[in-house]
Amino acid sequence: MESADETVLIFDGSFEGWLSAVFYAYAQRLARSPLSIVSSFDHVPNFLANEIWIESNEDQAARVLIKIKQILPLREVVWAFLSEGAKIYTHLFRVVVYQLDNPNKKVMQNFAHPDVQAVQIAVKKVGRERHRMQAFVRFEDTTQGVYLAKVNPDFNVLPLLGDFFAKRFADQSWLIFDVVRGYGIFYDHTEPTAGVREIAQIDEVVLGDSSVIHTDREPIYQRLWQAYFRHVTIKERINPKHHIAQLPRRYWQYLTEKKGV
Image 1 (cartoon, rainbow, N blue to C red):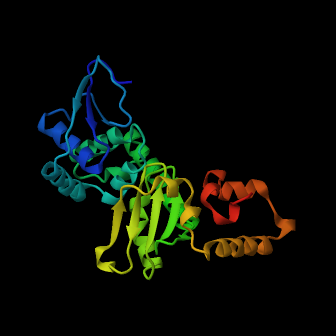
Image 2: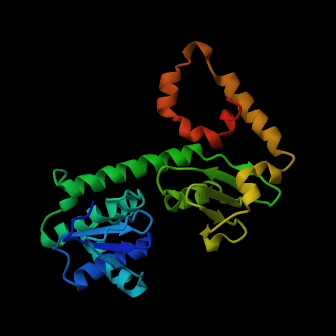
Image 3: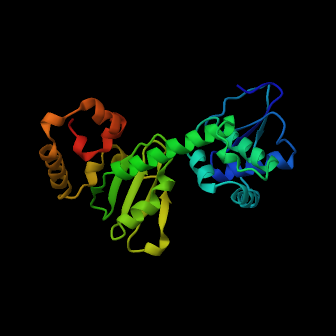
């Protein structure tokens, strides 16, 4: 909970919005005052705190981004941001302040610092989720000429998956849709130079039951995949506890081999 003498900067949840909040904090000389940066999605009104809503500003965000690239590993900043933790935006801001105050240090290596520690933990969690999504995405053959996969990751990792799947399935058009966050990434193999694009929504019926647009081949593919998993399973070596540790149940909903389990 924010204290009564604290300033709370509320941004729209986008990376550009967070960068704009960082710009505002420095422009208003608030960097070393009690300050929190929160997403509008996490914001709980506090009438005792000084709350300021920050509008995203492309130019201001670009200036802050240039500076961050100069002083911090951008990968770690972005990955931590994508963790969407309620306090991560403040931790990231404090790390920026910490690095600017100590230009001769590599502050991200100071794991004893509470803000650095929080950021590094978030980076590891996002990296782990990214790796799992690379392994656990299951595409379905649709009548739209696009392979569709639905996912529900713990963190906002879709921005980290595009390049991986674009290289792996460069000869196919595909869409990976995050049902939790309500957006997806789309790749059209007929326009490879366009790269991976963001899709804001898909049909609600398809979102609820993608089988309505399955090709005639898709049920066959699914049965073959399920049969393969049954046949390669060695019953004497089944270890449910270890299996769930490696493949948590929260991933099962959209795994072809787990349908009906």
